Image (cartoon, one colour):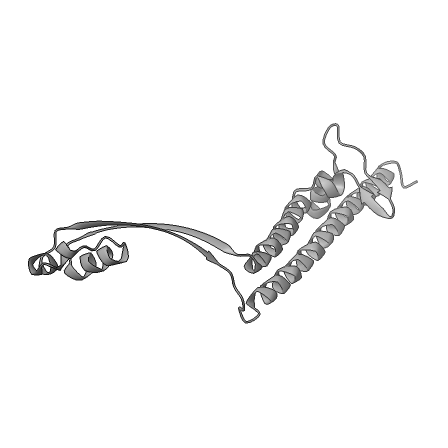
Amino acid sequence: MPRTLASFVIAVPAAGSPEPSLVNGRVSGWPTENHPSVAASRDATKGADMRIVEARSGYLPKLNYTESVVRSDNPVLVFSSLLTQHQFTAANFALDTLNRPAALDNFQSQVTLDQNVYDGGQTRLAVRTAKLGRDFSTEDERLTRMNAIANVVRAYHGAVLRGRERQGGR
């Protein structure tokens, strides 16, 4: 009895909602479109579609930008930083400067572009897995729609039967 009552509450349309209709063998209108569980399963299917796009991004190049700042008076770090940045001069060869350099601020910016040539099929398998997830979500959405329709039909049938019982069983 409580299940029928709950189904009946679900079957009651909101004010101004269009009545359900049968179009091409499918029920359209409020039972399937406005039901919260149907909307949630539809969103899950959209999320599954986005996971396919995300998996396919493994084929695309990746652009990275990094910055770093280092301040040090470590002789090896100062020597290599000056040499790498083409700022090493003859004055840097003085023994006192080599052994006890002044602190150096090293700012570095890098832009890198990475493109996978071969990833052992990981991207292909990720796309395939995402497509299977979408297929599962699509079927789950279909099942949720069918359950919503079945609940509406059950509630309507129960309401009709109760109405007949009240009218004396006609």
